[in-house]
Length: 133
Ligand code: C2G
View 1 (cartoon, rainbow, N blue to C red):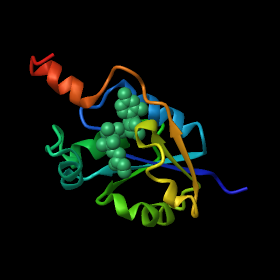
View 2: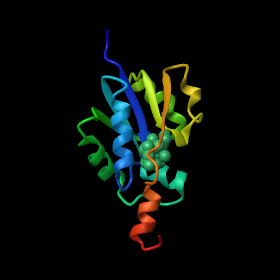
View 3: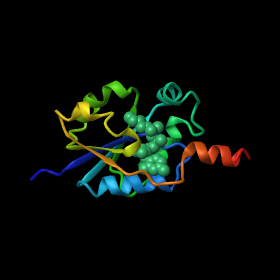
View 4: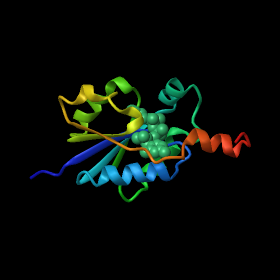
C-alpha cells in the first residue's frame, strides 16, 4: 500500500504549543506530513496584520520539526484543492476553528478537523507580550 500523506495549512506565527500539538496529531493520521505555510501576503489579507515572523522564517521553523516531512508556501485559500493534488495528499487536517470551511475539497481527499488546544493563540501572545493582557 502506498504511504498515506497528510496535509495541513497554517500561518504558525509566534510558534507555540497549540501549533506543535496540531502538527503532531496530524502526523499520527498518516505516514508523512506536508505543511502549507501561509504567505505573508495571505496572512495580511486574512488577519489584517503582518506576521511577526516572515514567511521564510516560518518555513524554516516548520521544516525543522521532526514530525514534518515537507513544507511549501500557501498563497491562496482558494488554491487548496490544487495544493492537495500537487502534494498527492490523502487527508486534509485543520484545527476546528475551520470546521466546515474546507469540506469542498472532500471530492479529492478526506477532511478532518481536530480540536484546538485551549487558552493559547498567537494573538493572545502578542497582546500579552505587548502588555495589553
Ligand atoms: N491551532 C490549534 N490550537 C491553538 C492554536 C492554533 O490547534 N490553540 C491550530 C489551528 O487550528 C491551525 C494551526 O494550529 O490548524 C495553525 O494555526 P494558525 O497559524 O492560526 O493558522 P491560520 O492562520 O488559521 O491558517 O488555509 C488555512 C490557513 O492557512 C490556516
